[in-house]
Picture 1 (cartoon, rainbow, N blue to C red):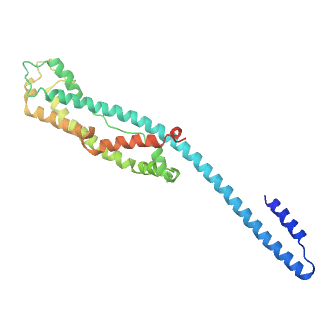
Picture 2 (picture 1 turned 180 degrees about the horizontal axis):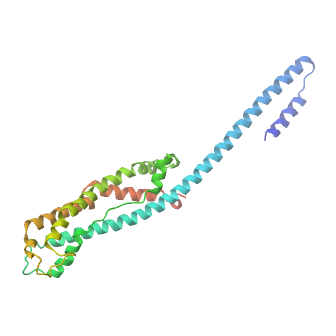
Picture 3 (picture 1 turned 60 degrees about the vertical axis):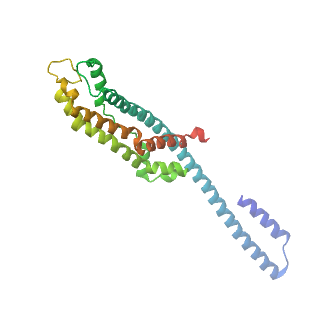
Length: 249
């Protein structure tokens, strides 16, 4: 490209060559200006080519990153739905018992009651894979994500997870510290009522009823009474949508 401009410059100088000292000065001046212009054009072209290459490399890196991020969060959503299902099973167990309160140990179907009570102790927590986000944090590479909304969602992801897990951990602690000790003290493990050593009168106690109500209260927090559940669900779905390179194409 520069050689092409050089030929044009020499052609113009030769065609319009003046006579005498003034002509030589003018010719030198034109030559110098031409050299400067050629150098500037060369620099600008080199910068533009370098910029194009950098943009192409960044775009390739972003596409790979988005693809990996998309797959990771698709898997996270599968895990989240499974965990939510387990929490819902525990909630259903609470509701099934609550409608029986106060329990009549003479008329109640003990086999059905034992089966229902199995779900009370389910303790699941959502522990998503965060390899891609952790990599972005450790390498300070969030700027590779060109979509501002997606970048903001990824930056705030850790806080969203912590807020949601607080409810799960609180519920888990309640089961470990209060519900399990009660069930282990008065009932067989797993929950069975077909043993003469089991004190069935505990099913009618206020302590048992209060434990079930409190267990339900914690599960209600996990499953959506607080904003953390819907925020987490929305964040996962939105990250999956924005990281879908096939859809973006």
